[in-house]
Amino acid sequence: MAADKFILIAALGIVAAILFWGVITMARGGEYNVKNSNRIMRYRIVFQAVALALILILMWFRQASS
Image (tube, rainbow, N blue to C red; front, side, top):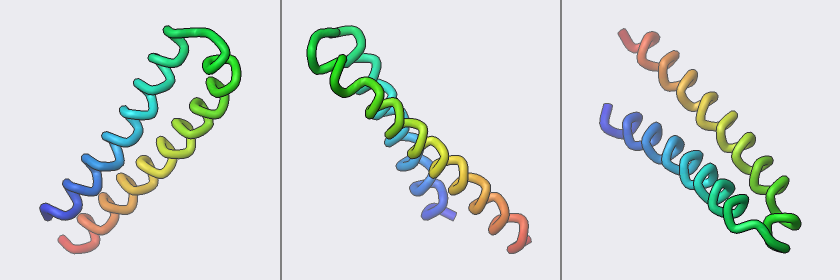
């Protein structure tokens, strides 16, 4: 049970880190923002989808093991 909590926390932490990276990039503005803001948003969407899939898979495994 501890492994699934670690996986969830890690996945959500990665999504939060990417989100903050994007917010900081947009707040700073400039050339880096222009070049990378869309790429950072795509990273967030992909990792958010992965985190959601992990949540669903872990919920399915918990229900199947009951």
